[in-house]
Length: 142
Image (tube, rainbow, N blue to C red; front, side, top):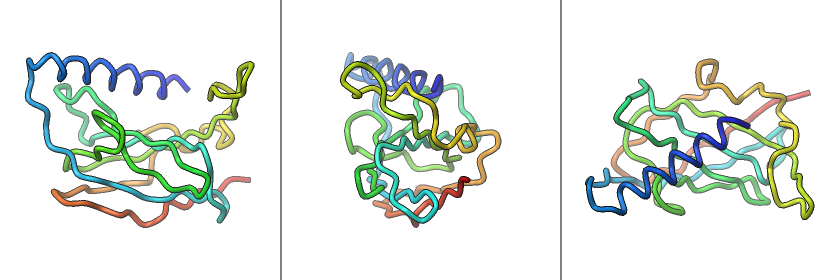
C-alpha cells in the first residue's frame, strides 16, 4: 500500500516540476494490457512499472488501474500518456475498497503482497519507442 502512495506522490511531484517548464519531459509511448487473477479479469487492480535498473534521475513509476475487464492503459505524467522506453519490473496491488463511500483502496491486498515488491517480481517488460499491447499478466493466488 505504501508503494501506491509513494507512486502517486512521485507522479504528482514530477508532474508539477514538469509543468513549471524547468525540465523537458521525456517522451512516452502508449502501453496497454490486461491482468487476470486465477484466469479471471481483475477489476480495480493497480499495475506499477518500476524502471530497471533503478535510476535516481527518474523519479516516477508509471502505473495504471484495471477496469472491469482487467484492461489497463499506463500513465506516467498524465492519464493514458504511456511509458518511457526502457526495461521495467512489473508489480501489482489489489486492495479492497474501503472508506465511508467504498471509493478508497486502503483495504487488505487481495494478492497478499505476493506481487507487490519489484525486487522479487518475475514480470519483466521492455518498452520500445512505439505503441505496445502487452500479453495478459496471469497472476495465480489461492
